[in-house]
Length: 162
Image (cartoon, rainbow, N blue to C red):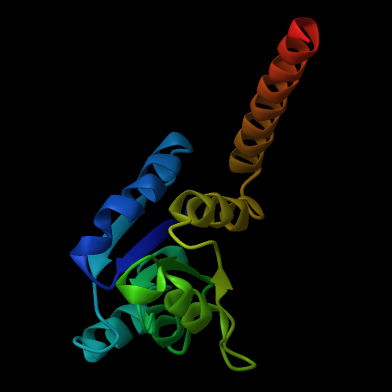
């Protein structure tokens, strides 16, 4: 199975990104986490991106706040799917990071989840890997079924109460 790389622009992003770790562990998807900055360590971020496919990665998740250039910098140096997590920081509540992450030039796409949306970034990474992995696809379907059953139980309880 391919691995997922999770790159943070700063270790201050870790409390948000740990939610992605939990999802990946739940599905048994191997991952590595690193701290690279698009602005402070651009050469290291570039080298990692360029070597990611050969190193066995299938998807890269990039989490950054404020200018949030990290996901775009990663995507510019690989053809692997890149998922950006805009991190809430600074005076704009994460809107700056969201816009910086989602507004990529044509030909350099970055899938973008909600501000602080680490869980959805991990679910999307799992879905991408599941395209070529029947067992992983089965786990996703089972998880969706459990979620649907949970909602229907809540619906029944609400209907019974009112």
